[in-house]
Image 1 (cartoon, rainbow, N blue to C red):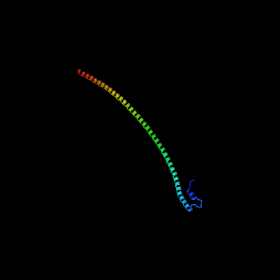
Image 2 (cartoon, one colour):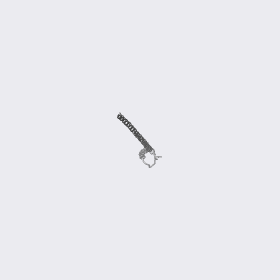
Image 3 (tube, one colour):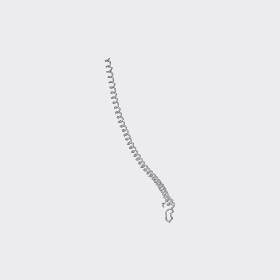
Image 4 (cartoon, helix red, strand yellow):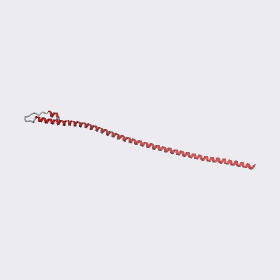
Length: 157
């Protein structure tokens, strides 16, 4: 068991014939008690301080572990978000490419349809011209025939 200031203070020595001066020994013991008591209190305070610092160290170690876990989780989440964003970007690009192909296909179909309509209209115009020319020629022949008949009647009469 460790020695305490009270143990030193209460220590009684047996008396002998040629012993030390009792007052001198008591004064010296009082000085030892005083210094020992200071050291004892300081030692006690330092032990408490060490205990408190150990608790703080444990607290900070716990916080450090929590922060590490949080950082690992945040990094995983960031990686997942990045992968998800990459997949979404690829999907958007594929959809845009498909839409572009559809637009081009529709435009090509419209071009073909317009060309067919143009060709059909051009044929109709040629047919109309040919019929109109034939009609005009028929009309012209009829007019010439009637004119020639009228001229022949004028010469006869």
